Image 1 (cartoon, rainbow, N blue to C red):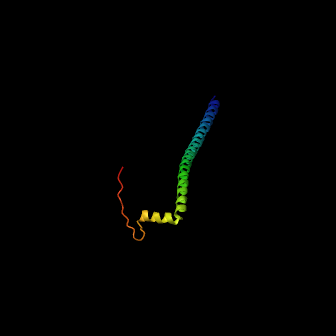
Image 2: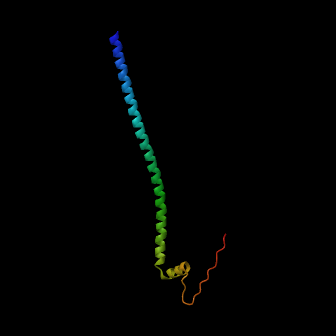
Image 3: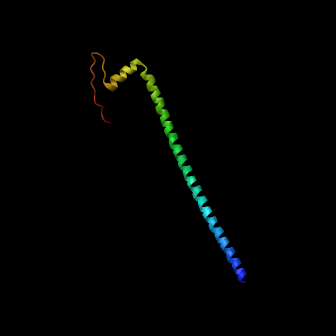
Length: 102
């Protein structure tokens, strides 16, 4: 009878130890998978933001390329310099008219 109780106690201790180790392993796996999942979600959000930024930068690049082509034209360049930097031709007077607020 005493031997049987010892065997039952040993068996119960083994099962408890195995159960505890199993629970610890499961918790570790769940934590690892959870952190990996959140990292993946963050990467997808970052990818989405970077794709939006890429589209905006590509549009800006097209605008700048168009500006470069315009600036290669001497007439446009002269007009741009007069408007932007108030350069004038000989004998030309520049008057700046204030814009009305709308």
